[in-house]
Image (cartoon, helix red, strand yellow):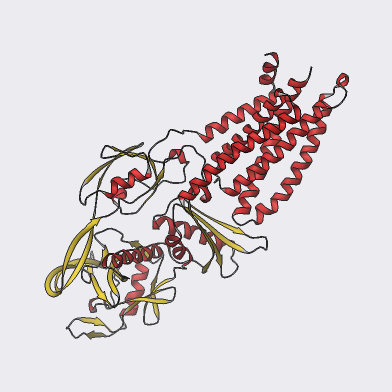
Length: 573
């Protein structure tokens, strides 16, 4: 008991205890946490309109967790999707989370059928005209009702839209699992040419905004390079699949609207101040709807945008030069169309009403189409194309085209299996080390401090990962294994140095000083070897190097000095 008091009062052991307590607080273990955590919320979805927000860059245990839907408990992801799959359209929901209660209303999935017969309908049209106010002429927009003849449209409710929530099992600690353990997609993008620092910052910000606008959460976008100095952009998205992100990331997104050879506006906030994503001004075009094509079905989408005053003035200057022509149906249009180009490929052509000749109109309707084998597939593809185009119009183009160099996708089920296997192997490895140490020294008072020190170093590394928000993936686990290997080696050196020599002439300070001289030499050698991997490592190499450096630094500065103090007190007579 006297030696135990000496150990707990030793300043090096006290430092280790303080660091362990801080690490446990950072990890915040809660194995009994139930429910499903919200990964992200889609814009303009039922959940978004109800006030549920996509989580920001916060710790896992601070995530909003769904507990009940209409008083039905939600403990697993399977239970969540089982409940929402049975929902009917246009019904109210109460979603209770650990942060409040939200009232949602489900939305129907509407299939639009265009009939052969015609009908007269009243539509709203925005016109621009000059108005004199207090002696000053100003251009204002007016909404007028206009009766037009168009094909009759019939709407069919074919299902219920998703709530707009992407969820996953509620976290049980603040440790962030990487894609290898969580599941998701890692995309390595290579620019076509060398980038300046300013271009790198622009690309990183644009890609983050593009992915956030698209509705993908848990996004990590950073610059990296390989050992040859080649530049890359590394994007990691938890819970997303390859098809969902690869095209969105590699697309440069150079959007231009031209009349003839003159560009009137481009994508990005400088020319486009607002892109409508609401249901009342975006979706399947009711005037065109869906139609049958060779080998399948097609559907037309439409959404409105608002131009800046400068872009509207450029459009007015170009249209003022055009002639007015009359179509076969008697409608009057300008002699040239507004053509839309995406990455230098024409994606659509819009006729310009004669009323807009020389007018600085700020309201523009953008349309396009999607195709599929079935009507439902065509609707889905059309809405996806619309969502992609809206995202690019909001975020603008990248300064250089990015090519996909590598894509890695891991399913969440496989990641969960990795975690279980790692835990089993870790326990077996710790037991094996204990057996070997016991065979080597045959003294429990030596084996126990070694085991305590090894477990302490693992806790400290995990605490650092939780505190810094660093993702724990397979590369990081490999680094932890390397750290544990060096730890065992160093602990054996400390133990052997304290046990050798003449028992009548112990000089503990000299023995520990000699042991730590060997340890510090090995420490600096390892750090020097890891720094190039961290500085020039792409993806896995960087994570491995970081874990190894952090792990051995914590060990050398905190846990191994405490072990030396414990051994000195326990072995010394």
